[in-house]
Image (cartoon, rainbow, N blue to C red; front, side):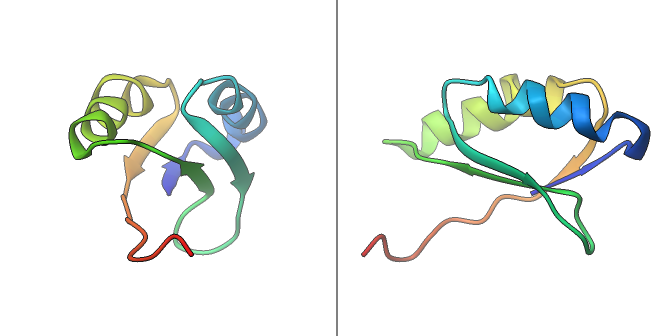
Length: 72
């Protein structure tokens, strides 16, 4: 999930959806503004995506990462 600049919400959403790792991305209401679903094979791949791609997107102010306990 990410907190984003509200004036850039649509352009940020469109940009996030172009990233290869992103399966889904949606604007949401609540404490965070954007829900992003990705799948990674390793924790290192997840970390690399968050640090090197997601947090570098102009307009993203904060992120929080949640990991599924089960994929059934």
